[in-house]
Image (cartoon, rainbow, N blue to C red; front, side):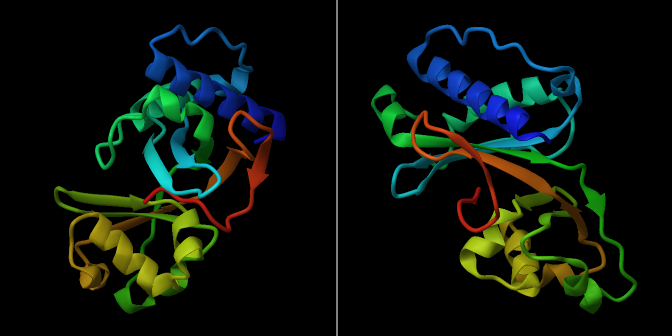
Length: 202
């Protein structure tokens, strides 16, 4: 994804957040043809300058066009059920981050103990799935917390509501995906492409 497209994605998300919170119109943004492609997207809101998570919602699967996914994820991130709804007074004190995902691919191994070798921390995000249980962690998360691949697998299981050792159960499916991250350096400030070092959807 081009840096200019990442900048546009963050600007669209910021506009959607502010419109959702203030009740005003989002306005229109001219997006390139690439924004019509279906992509998975997460929008993360963090306090500034402390970078504490304030909301994070998204779509791991490429269900919607990139433009639609950004707008919907941004709106829902304002109402993350783990937190109070975002208030108008907070808009000057949050930064907006957009993670554009690659399509998830299932990780298949004959020996489940080999699964950690198939996961690259700092590159891969993970989805754990077992029956009705499903949990996702973005690629940023294990780097922020200093997890190795095995702990990353266990934490993804816990995010899905399962025991941390369920990654050893052959019935638990794992999918990996990549992500390109673009974020405001400061509230409404310059957008930068982020290397995976901190900031995450948890």
